[in-house]
Image (cartoon, rainbow, N blue to C red; front, side, top):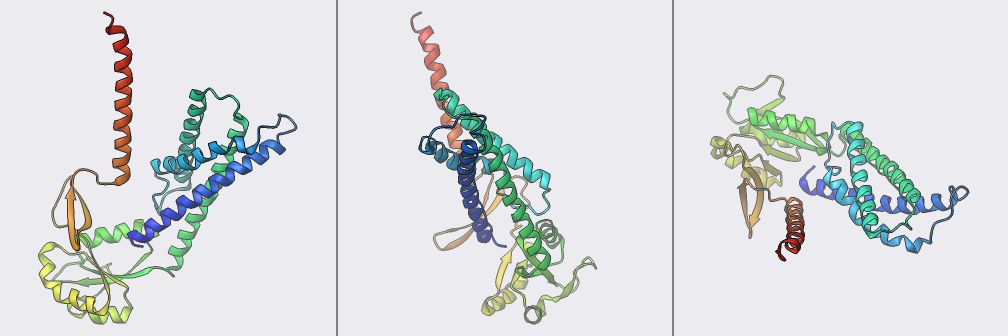
Length: 302
């Protein structure tokens, strides 16, 4: 599963979370005014609470993102999934409660709020359980898996293989491996289908969807003719970028205009992280201004 597909699935998950959160709100309102009406007085009209719904629909995805609920991990336990979900909802609930506290609004029903939190947790937990079952079924049948051929048999190929095995949500089926040199040593457990010289016949025989180049940089010149042949066949080529032995820097693939580039950076370029950092900077600045203003009130007269 490529990055675009993963990004699409995450967007769909966020959309479903928002829909389920809205459903939780209306269901909680119904339960509060019907099931609990015998022991508690009825709460205000739905229109009085709608502004809270809009706040919830904006806040919930952010809290879910903060605790990593949108990271698709194959071997994550149900306990870990539910713990992250519980932590996210708890943070969102506390945030909303803090808003009511500072607004000094006592008209909002705490029972309604508690019912909403419980219903929301149940619905989102069922959703994530369903997602995990779907991925498990897709991984078991391999019906929608991409058939991958790996060029290389050294450490880089082993690392890629382990990563795929640990993240079956990628929906990748490794068909076999191709040696770059006949003298290359490799683990006998690897399903080596041949060498680079007969890669085209291997692709045709095993109906390969994509080829992954997991080779050291000193082997690039040897594979160029075969890369061009794969291009002519319309086969997608993926190269694992491991040009330098960086300890801290991260690698990012992008473009400058129409030119493909590989970027090595030590500072995070993630938009969400930069956005959150900016918010923290602004919040810290506001706190500093408030403290300075308070201190100035007492210091200035002196």
